[in-house]
Image (cartoon, rainbow, N blue to C red; front, side, top):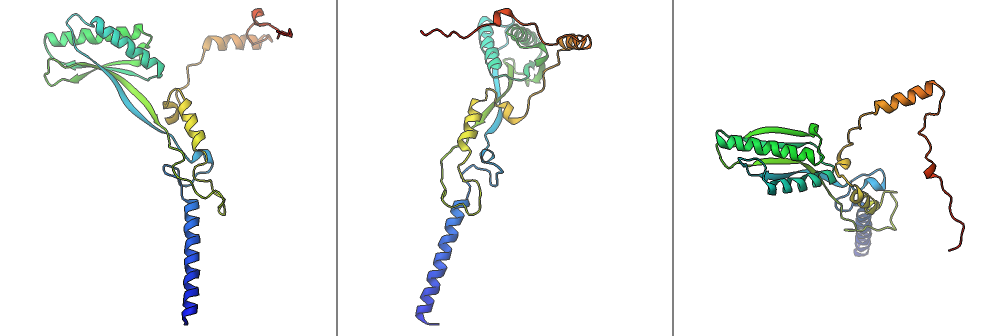
Length: 233
């Protein structure tokens, strides 16, 4: 083989290698992206993690102190804003006066949470082994869900290369990130919430009206009537 033919073959192989490299760059997913998404909005997924949100209260012989009641009120308000789930009150298992103080403080905390709007069915009081520590705290907490948003625009592929008709590497990232950032409770991204109980009373009223051939919708409110003013201001 002549030197001329060898040089031409080398150039051909180099060109093919460069094309293959460009094609690989065009099809490579962006950092944090799903490898083979079906649609652009499925290419980036917000990561949801559950972390314990806790408050620790020292046991007092007289029960909950005013400072503890104020801190627990703020805890309950934060629970309501984040649409938290069940709250667990963990009381230390200790003997003697310390055990009685822990019991009074735990019961005071439970009463305060109920007074702040936490349903009784969502509060669980359990004991834990304090290993004989007289100063063991009452631990009150629930699971708080946090969302980690994907980072967009970290790497861009060749937008002009679409031979494989695949989703471009950063498409859908901004949409997925904005949707995840606007959801009030990140737990909804992890799993659907339970359905609220049915209103049996309202269902009975509607059923009776339907059987009687009456209108089943709610009565019209005359105060809701109105017209858009055509006056020029």
